[in-house]
Amino acid sequence: MKKQIKKWTLRLTVSGLLITILLLLIILKPVLTYAGKTTHSNYSVFHHQPLDPTLLSHLDNATEHLKTSEFYNPNLHLDICLNDGSSYPDLMKTLRGPAFAWGFYNKVILQGTTNVPENIVELHGYRWNLTQLLTHEMTHCLQFDYLGLRKSNPIAAIPDWKWEGYAEYISRQNPNQKNLSKNIDRLIATDETLWEVKFEDGTISPREYYNYWTLVQYCMDIKKMSYLQILDDTTSEQLVRNQMMHWYYQRN
Ligand SMILES: [Zn+2]
Image 1 (cartoon, rainbow, N blue to C red):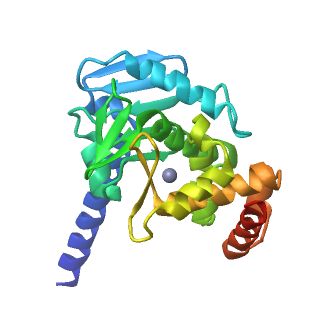
Image 2: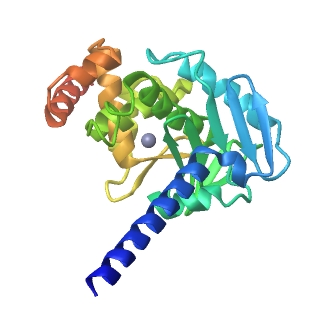
């Protein structure tokens, strides 16, 4: 009996290991699950349908935003995985839950319904600006690249407001998103019960991320901190928020 249990435990362990290795291989090699791959500057775009070339100009615009990050690395090569029929985004959805997109290591995976000509990704009726979503996720890739996997989330447990707020800060660079005071106006004017904060063009940022963004924007634009200084700083999220609102009400 004991021998049988040992044998089955071994078989289950080996099967588990094989499945894990297979999953890792698929995750690290998206080419296995896509019909096409288009290379454009530092990007490999994986797609299942013929690629709309407009996406490449969205990528160029995203690159311009990324260049404003102190973590920008012109040699970093990123994989962009589209949600246009491959099973890859479904696999990520099973592993990590639903999201507009994921950015980790050197990969950006879109999960919502992408409308490339309109520059929109839609999920559950919410619309996210595609260029800004790509930039947000690519900023996470910059964080992984610069800090290393061990000093990045989830392993490093960097507070969400610093991790997500920075990705929002780098991606939200439209002229109507650059002024912190106006961004706080928009937040205050939004119904508190809503999950999202809407921009003037109808696209959204989740309220939680929007809040994180304003905190990072306050630290960087007003306090003139670098992102590395923000990461090292021990001031609590609540205290930064109090300081920011004090600054805001003094101005208004
Ligand atoms: Zn994010």
